[in-house]
Structures are given as structure tokens and as C-alpha cells.
Length: 270
Image (cartoon, rainbow, N blue to C red; front, side, top):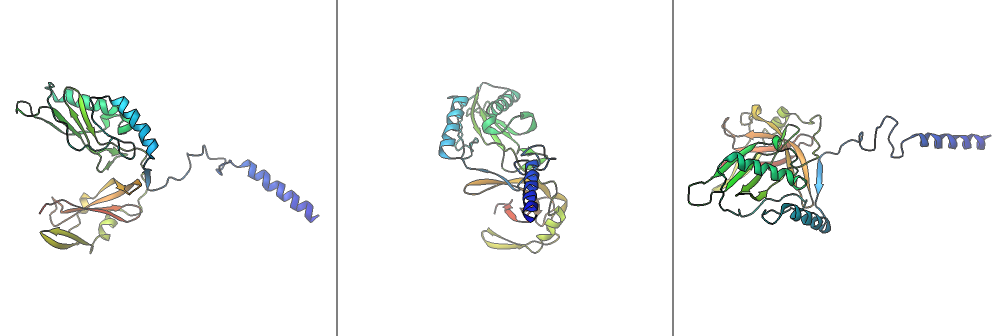
């Protein structure tokens, strides 16, 4: 009798197992991907040499010979070194800006720009009549992702009679937590008493006080945090610190989930 009961129990458990999704999801799950919990922080890994060479060949074929630009270790348009300056017959800024937007869209696989109307022009420079270079340098503002500024994602495009050089890129698939483990006010309070070490002619220190945290100007941003083999996309509080309310001396970036200080950015030059 005990053997029969054991046999029936095994059969029952096997049937229950068959009723579950093969990947371990319940019947309410719509797919293998939809209801999995996103991992924070999201990240991208450096490509293998063979993967990178394949993408470079595709990039070179798509951009043509007249356009200068390189890919970084992640297969994205890298930040340029020296600008290849020259002349331009374009006289209207909007014409140059339009060319810049068009090339970023055409190379969207490598710039992660799929809708150029979603990012703003930061600066447009031209030196017509100066006797020097009169080409156009168009710089676009940092990327906005789900309403958050992604730091260090300005894109620069150099336009002569056509686009000659591009530099910079955006990112995709950034995981932004729905709820913050650490709120903006709490983040500022955690910094009170924190010591900032800096050099201004000589090594110096600054102790953060309650008054030196500008709570009203704390912003939530995405900070691409670089490691040797990957980039992690940290959602962070950008906290202004200093004795002046209008012009902070530092920005401290604190991870909204982990409370980790990612970066101390000094705004003044000695």
C-alpha cells in the first residue's frame, strides 16, 4: 500500500511539473522576458575583438570615406580626438543642424539615436568671414532617458559642405527603478559631515554641512559608470554642495538604490 501511495505521489508531482512553464514561470506569465525582474544596475559589456571588427566593417561601409569617426570597445561611436577642421559653403545654421541630425539617424545602430527630435541643440559655432575655418560644429545636449539626463552623452557633429566628423553616442535599455531606496532629502542628509578632499594650490578639505547641501537643486540623473570590462548605468542623485546657493562648488553623485557615492565633481578651477 505504501509503495502504491509513493508511486501515485510521484505521478502527481510529475503532472504538476508539466503544467508549469518550461522556464519556471507561472501560467500568468506572458513570456520568458515580460515578468522577469530587471537587474539593477543594467550594464553593457565590451565586445570581443571579432565582434568589434565585424561592426567596424559595417560602420565603415555605411559612413563612407568622407566621414571621420571611430567605434569604441562597445561598438558605439567614440569620442573624437583632434577635429578635422575646414571650410563650408553652408550659410544657414538650420541647414547644418539638419545634416547633423540626419547622419546621427542614419548611423543609429552606432549612435543609438533613433529620433533626433528628442534631443536639443546645445551649441552651434561657425566662423564665417573670419579668414580661418568656417565649417560648423554642432553640439547636442546630453541624452534624456525616461525623463532623466544621462551624463556625459553630448554628441558633436562637424559639418563642412557635408558631415565630416561625428563624436559621441547615446545609450539604450537603461534600467530605471520605479522606487528609490534612498530619497533626495535622505541622500543630502547622509552627506552631512562628509569630508571632501581636494587640491587648490595645496591639499585641502571641505566638510559638508546641512547648510551647504542645496536640497532644492538635487536632481535625479543616469550616470554611466565605467569599469574595465563594462559600463553600468547608475541612477543617481546629483547633489549640489557648497557655500553659494547659486553656484555649487561640487556635485556629489549618489546611487539612489545603493547609497554609494559614485563621483565627486568639482566645478571650480583654482
